[in-house]
Amino acid sequence: MYKSVDATVMRQFNKRTVLHILYQRQETSRVSISSETGLNRATVSSLVDELIAEQFVQEIGLGTSHGGRKPILLRFNANAGYAIGIDLQITHIDTVLTNTRREVVYQNRRQIGTADQPLTPQTLRDVLAEEVHAAEAVCPQSPRGILGVGVALPGLVNYETGRVTYLPNLGITDWSIAPELSEMLQVPVAIDNDANCGAWEAFLSTGISNLLFINAGIGVGAGIILNGKLHRGRDGIAGEAGHTTISTMGVVCSCGNYGCWEQYSSEQALARYLQEQGAGPVDAFAPRFVDRCIEAAQAGNHAYIQSWRTLAEALGVGISNLLQILNPDYVYLGGTIAEAATIILPEIQRVIRHRAMSANKTVPVAVLPPQTVARGAAGLAIARAIDMLPTHAG
Ligand SMILES: [Zn+2]
Image (tube, rainbow, N blue to C red; front, side, top):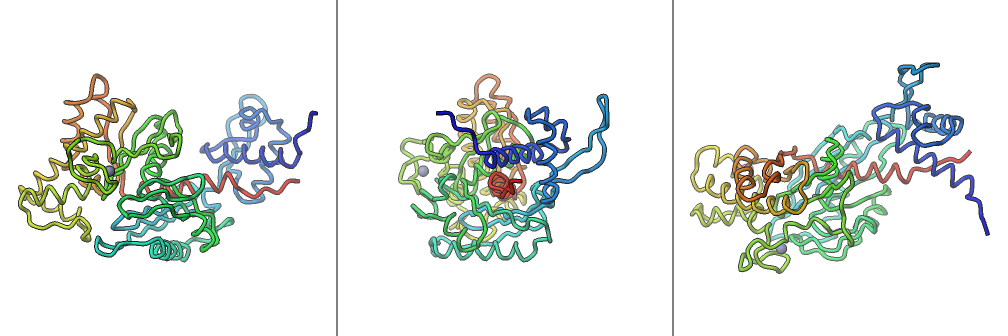
């Protein structure tokens, strides 16, 4: 038997569609939204009026006429609300507070536990809560307040359920982090893999619809954007490139396997190369480890220069492998290792020219700023919030 769609549900669906378009465009008009969605003008006008009353949308003046009256231009209110993005790494946490356009209004880097003080879900939850409270305390007044918190995590996480499957370098498995944090903080919390957040930010900020984001720090991961969408794979764990094998008899990895790419292209690898170069005992978990390694190389220390070169070569090998599979438009490098761009990029590009085939040799590789992953996490929280907006059906 035919059953009509409930009018309230339909209106909510249409309102979300209109809001999505407004969020994606720099500016638009009621007429443009109507022609883009196929919704009649009266419906669009009524929904837009509702969104203006809720302060999500602003009228910003008159546009150009294509015959008839000039349309009133509309824009998503960048300061309608704010989101907190957190990039949880093994040695530090980057926190940002952004408006709905992911413009950063506050940022903080906090050093956390060392190798001999393993972090537990309980201690991590408390640290994350402190970071959220610190960001909330400096949040400007806005109509919608904090829209949500996005947390980027280094490992296998389920974006849909908000559960951690496995964080290899933290030794944490099966942790229902998003529901726990959400209840504790009384704000919606979304989680995703750190490299996915970086890839999402790279896509949002460049508009490049086929790209690869490599996040290299204590571990290494990849985020993949294909045709403008984050590629998550069947179980949401696509992009674990750090745990692909590049040496069958290689170094044992935190995942239990041997010869994983991240054992040759991460901070841990850099520390091992330095020891092999006779630089003495080196601790990758020590504060400012990467900064000090960059400074030593820039000062001409041979062991450090050689170690960075070896690491860059391994990064180049892994990136070449991924280029052969994905042939993206662009490769972006993020994470602490990327802060050594001036030292490692020429070597990475040399290896790619040597190893990748045909046009893959010319795929550009660029570096994104340190807060990229945290901004992507905030972007994730904003996207979630817009999708779950309360609607007031009239
Ligand atoms: Zn591994």
